[in-house]
Image (tube, rainbow, N blue to C red; front, side):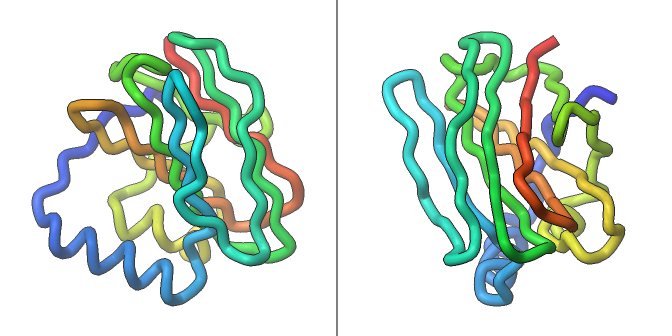
Length: 144
């Protein structure tokens, strides 16, 4: 399955869903990856996120660990790191399914399977990964 960018029609509704996920504890962490640096935007108290292997133009790995289940992780990737085009997303080397929409990916309890959503912007992509059950997980985003 190849991920494609999903247009967001109602920015206010998306903002509300993201805020709700944060307040309800479903948002686990946020990480931004640029050519120059990696920065954490948010990290839930029971979640640890760190950058794994990066091959510019080809692959980004992010390691996520948690003592709690049902978390969504947001990974922002600059265009210079991974070009905006069809991407594939894996958790522990197993390709994931695409979430139905923004609300679906922000609710890791609804289907009990990992899923993702890619949002495309002018400067890069935002990959939301919903993980229902945790141990140490490796999220890999690959360009074709």
